[in-house]
Image (cartoon, rainbow, N blue to C red; front, side, top):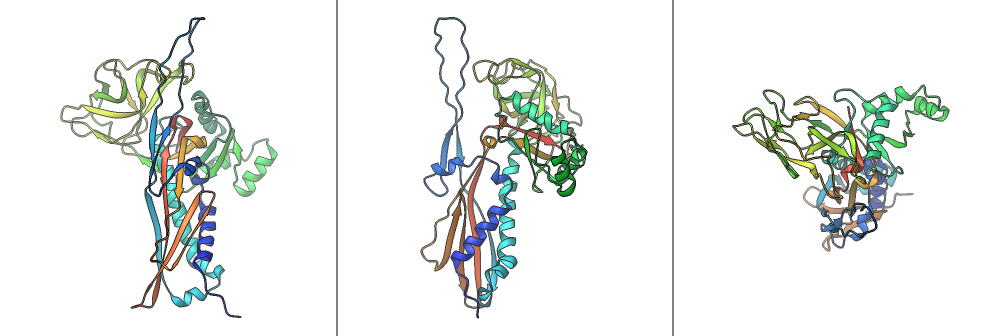
Length: 395
């Protein structure tokens, strides 16, 4: 019996299945904003949680309510396209999937995961030793500790490790007294939930290459009582020092605080550079930073503003690439995938959507070469929602 011609709906459904099945990071982040987008490629204003301070005594004390907000934009287009003869449409769906659809969806899924993992640049909390692959229960526990100090909910925490960290961690845990975990670790390399963190492996974990910030530099804060999302500094090598977005540093005398009570946590607050920056001819450099330096109010992030000439210490060695494994709560990062419109002029077309994942299939004919061209498109946006609910585990 001859094969039935493949239809765009059949292709779209199989494409959606393989796209969904190959996503890793995308399954672990916050997805509920998809319900609020009203148009393709649009943007949404999202509100950050409101914070309050506790007042002492029976007399009522009013507080000004500050509602911070941010913009979530869905405008990232990705597609995979290929040529095939009209004879290929007579294949069984299984053969067609194996030859075309599955490889195409693997490529798209890896692209989405890589975009999400690239949000590490917004995360300022870092644990682990740069240059050393994490390979112990303690390495994970340290990340859990930091999340708890940031008032992160204990449920639904996840970790995404690169292959080196995943297998090093498997080796470290193979002798654990927990029989089921030890069995799965040795037989399958499956780490499961360790230190209240559901562990996943993803080869798309990003490597961050640090700036050139050491040679000839003795970076200092330039001016006391600075607050906000930028920091004026000096003491860098003249016209040669470079800070890269995603570089992390500490400032002497500036400690982290409990985000609820504002109490000193006893260790230096880590800051992340939110943009690239270069020193001028006098060694001055203004760094865009997160979290914003706030020493008062319910939104307090540090024990005190940095003092003049406070020493700045960078994390890691300059011009060195380190894997950026992530441990996080789903609400740290957001993903929105929006269904693309079906062009009126296209005859062979279909769109499939399931649980917010959407892929569009369009085919058009090249009569000169007797080839059909198929393209698979997705539209999505990614966003760091609450960086305090994530921690990098460097390798």
